[in-house]
Image (cartoon, rainbow, N blue to C red):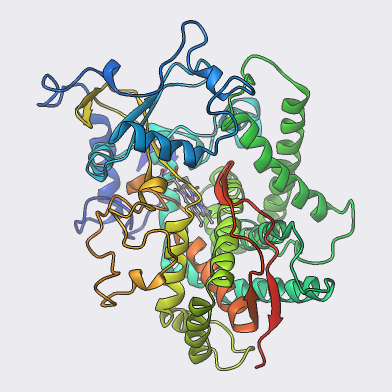
Length: 538
Ligand code: HEM
């Protein structure tokens, strides 16, 4: 089948994240969604439209003439200046209730915030088959316009919309989201996790209190880059070694970490990048160029090494990169770079938060270690797919971490048709943020919501604490629907393996004040992660 000149090559696999649970093969589904996407009725008004209050009446901070609401974020005069985004959203919830608006920002579009799980559900159920999520505008500009030549018109799922998004996502889903594909990487991920444990021992030995250094989160980002490199580039990068200053890997690590800070400057904080080219903007482009060209070089090397061998290799023997390269080298490049950008700060910060919660809650840590000692009788026992299937408490620890500290405090959609939300008319084309990060810490949705209790996620566990009856649209750490996180399966596997290795080998303590969590590009640990680390006997 040919659509826009691209040959589709699905075989008979099933798409796992499609919202409709029928038994149609991928090939039919693709035609089905293609048709549905172009035929959806995005123009008619909902039945309750005329009874709803007008958009202009949605409550929110009042803008001033000419300067709008921008002044609120400025130093000295602004009441929102320096306030963490999650705290700001919590204040809005307390002040305005179920729905609020931040409007007239001048450098950004109006944002409607939803706090009711019923409205969040309605938004997602009306997002269509090509959900629209516009984020990281400067990064999108870099990939889709400024360096269009490198990406040859294929932007990558994270940065494109509509039918273009669908055309890539429907091809990469069966490659990145299949459990079998993720399982191929367990051995290698285990080696990477062992390297992180070695690194932690080394760092503990260098400190008289056996504490990790204040910038330990960087080590976790290096681990995440190493893990993402295995998947996206089919190679070990060596990020966890003692790196030679100015070496390519050291530079790559430094630039990747700087990139997240720069994206935050241009895509989260108010910025005039569209109008003025500042020295910081030029630095941003230099950093993105270095990272992109290095990754492209690695992918080209792999493609050259594989060469004709791919033709004779069975699909089930192929790595993710090999399958992507066979599909289309342009998609392979775009997806590898998506994996390397979306899969580092996210998994690194979530793992950092999990380690903090385990250090801060010794009983939880002990219970997890007991589970791990049962399935990993020695420190050297390799982690396998079967072992991971027997670790419900480990999975519960990760879920509880993403409840307490979700890296994405909101999910974002642009409405594709007129909707009534929170009793107000929301016209097509409105940017809506669902405040799941705030809701996940509210007592009305989770009992003892400010306590770290993995037991709430255990099936058939204690009734009093169980979250079985929590509305399903409150907790969405990986998003929702066809546009949900492409790396969810890989991320969970990486985190399970690394936490299993660390807790099986090392005791963690937290001899400091409670951690502050902050929101930059992603939400996560905001204070130095100075975990105290000692060796588990055997
Ligand atoms: C703890 C780890 C992670 C969390 C919590 C997380 C969370 C998310 C969320 C909330 C979204 C937006 C979903 C939506 O709009 O419905 C997303 C999108 C995405 N994530 Fe992740 N992510 C994680 C790790 C990863 C990893 C390891 C990869 C790479 C393999 C990855 C690749 C992506 C991509 C490519 C998208 C865009 C998908 C699209 O627009 O079609 N993520 N992620």
